[in-house]
Image 1: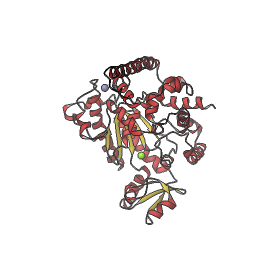
Image 2: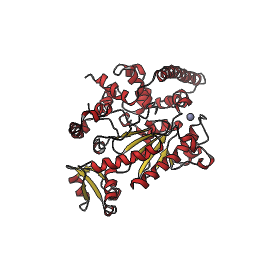
Image 3: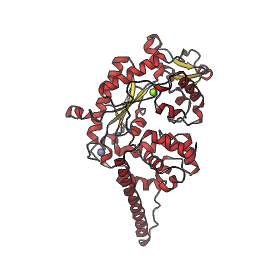
Image 4: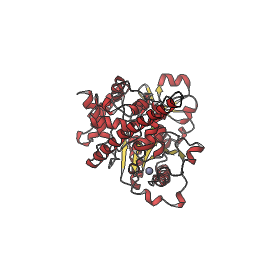
Length: 408
Ligand SMILES: [Mg+2]
Ligand SMILES: [Zn+2]
């Protein structure tokens, strides 16, 4: 299996654009290239002007260039803000499940173990210096009285996971499960009901959440995304509340116009909090990541190829030309990588239907310092082995193609 083919497969799985989308993409690509030329021309013009006036021409950094681009054509095209997506991520999932099952664990520092690994810890433990996940021998060095619960049997985690998704599904059927403790909820169809003066203030945080972020809320876009996402924050709060009432589990949520941004901001404030990000903040969100490897969907295999192309930061990916990317990726993947770097994601929320997750525990995600759900990563090897085992235990027809694909 060629790397090139593999990567495009992984990425395509996230988003398979329709013909209309493809045409829009081409249209946008044209616009982008045009804009790129304009910006370059503008800069040269400014530099020439400076020279004429005997001033040393200002060096324009790539960042400034991409900001100029982003402010215009690429990042703020109104027809891209039509959706409202909530990403829900349960706080220290396994630990919470155990604390709900045995409330006496609540005040104790708790770790969930699988073999030699503490796959997650509760916030009491974390406040005492234990990390989210660690080798057990290292965790007990920090905290000898750490209480461990064995988390090898996933049965009740699956039950809770199913219940959590079911709550989201009671709001809309457009729910996509991601592992056991994450859900994408596309609330585009129902968010309209929440646009009212009653819901005009934002619920929870805004990405950045500084004074100026709140002030920015004079509506720079005007397509209605401000109102939809604001209303979406109220709906997200309702879903989280309902999950808490039904299951006793708290979670975080990110609200955005696409899956990528919603996922990226959902853990921005945690635990048990939520964050909204507006389209005009996409650039800031992406910039906050620094490494392109941190973009969900860009796994270590893709990242290695990018590094071969001298691209490792988000900014370098933004500035990379499509033709450069195209030397190693197919056209669609090149486009998608570029989109991701700008916080653009047209990937649809795919209805998962009745939850039937295999044991894709997020444990191994946490063993890696990198934030990514890419499964090509070397660091995920042991977990992949476990997963393969689990898959063997299941009847093949119950597996979804996506789950299978992820294992390859
Ligand atoms: Mg989680
Ligand atoms: Zn908009």
